[in-house]
Image 1 (cartoon, rainbow, N blue to C red):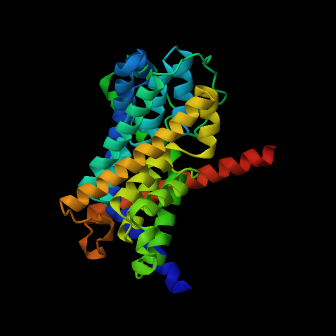
Image 2: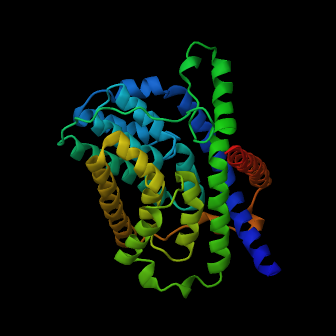
Length: 357
């Protein structure tokens, strides 16, 4: 038992060390994006209807560091402000499926092809879903999202609108504060879950990756399995990446991994319930259908690209301890400390809320 726990801890640590540096870089970039792309600018950019508005909404959503829970208040406010449903749907799909932080983490744990395929597929999913939605009547009264956007329970809850008149130093410091004191705080419990689960799967499958039948790792059963796992699961773009890297290392095809990375962050039961009130029943059905169809199509194309070009799958998280630099180890220690600290705070808040009921 002790030897297994040690193996689990080692697998988790290896993944943290491999990904920490680029993930921190991604967090900093996310902070600067938050500063530039505040809610007012987002509303202005996607206000127009039609395919042009859908294109801008999908493109804008790719780098933004919002998860599937925090994008909902923004989506509701956009609808309330008069944004067309097609643009809002496109934005809601693109944003949680990708982000500069998750893109950096994908590159640090997997390979360049999958790193590029992830945001490209997210954009195409969002764009095509929005284009389809333009053919349907937009006659639903925009709802008011009920919830506190500043309670720290969802990433991206802080607004940057009131910083536009501040000095450049204040804005830079605010973006760094957002990255580490807001975004990382909100991602921390999900990152912990993602890394711990990835370490567990790595410990279980590391020595026997062939124990899972190959038919369940590749082809249509692999894609469908990724959909079944990803659809109901709440897991943000960043926290899904370590788990995806372990599945990739155990023999799952890059296409099946891509399907999981698309379906997991953009869909879960809570998101779909709220989204139904923002977009309406049939629009939510079209939203879900677009994610399933385009993500599987993207998975098929990705596997075809790997096969036709004979590209070897690279899993960076499998590096050995001797390969880690002191900087990587220090980054991993710091990131681990933040994740544990913020996760303890998150649990404390949840327990405090329960005790008040």
